[in-house]
Length: 195
Image (cartoon, rainbow, N blue to C red; front, side):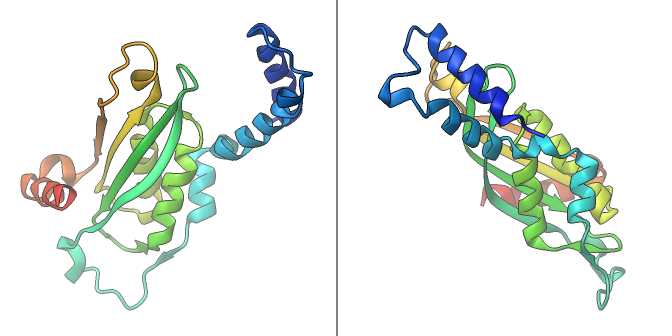
């Protein structure tokens, strides 16, 4: 669990290390506010991937003809997310994820896909790992080996500091199963992604 009291103490120390006075009026409640914010934006740290599978493992399999659906693709596009880079604790922002899978024996509720993205992103992360974590969770919940995740975003560790390339965007892809081996499936997904 996230230790908000420890965060408060450390933020107070950071303010002192920056040369400011944490007892001045404008900063008096800053350690507590930061601790509350961290508890919210890093809530995903409280869950392993397996915890997320258990939490969101609600699927539907009745009244579906999976034989007929064997060539169908489910795609959820433009799922907004944000995260924090584990290297600088910097914000990753203007992020959107596309998650696709080929139903096998069951389908997942659409809101669950967005929830998976949300929980996974609320950790100290790498953009690459966000995609891998989402894909692994989707595979476990849907029992489908065929999962794809595409994420596009901006990183303040690139745009606001260091190299300062404000228009730089990062795109990562995670392709599992037939998305790696079936070129027509890959091209169909990319056509949907780019539309």
